[in-house]
Length: 146
Image (cartoon, rainbow, N blue to C red; front, side, top):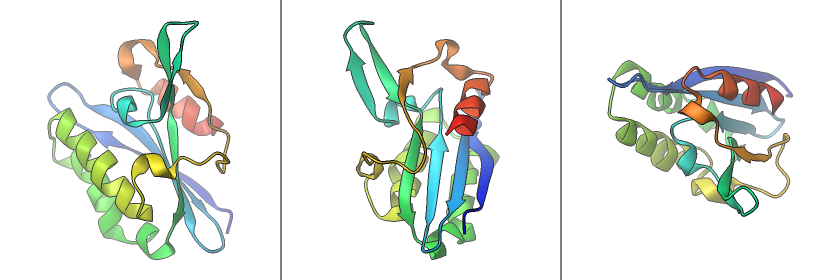
């Protein structure tokens, strides 16, 4: 228990695709699986209005609490998450599969119901990066910070 692993993911398509990072944290009775994304797909993450900046702020890391060990260790779960990298789709189809189908299946909750007031690691609201994080550097830094 207590081990932590970071795994690159995302999707590929004719426009290049997008990078995300999955962080898997083993706890004694379950796993916490996090998805960090600072680019395309951020619209699926929790957001709040920032009237002072006339913009929205997003939580770049979504933590799925209480993922059963059997689900986290099941290779079919990870095959579904990595499929958009191997078999290119449109960005919309890839995002829908990851955010609306696979992630909610992991802990049997809608994605936004997984956002808790007391996350395992520090998550915070921040502005969306300019250029949608095309290089993936903001995603990597945010995943390492959390």
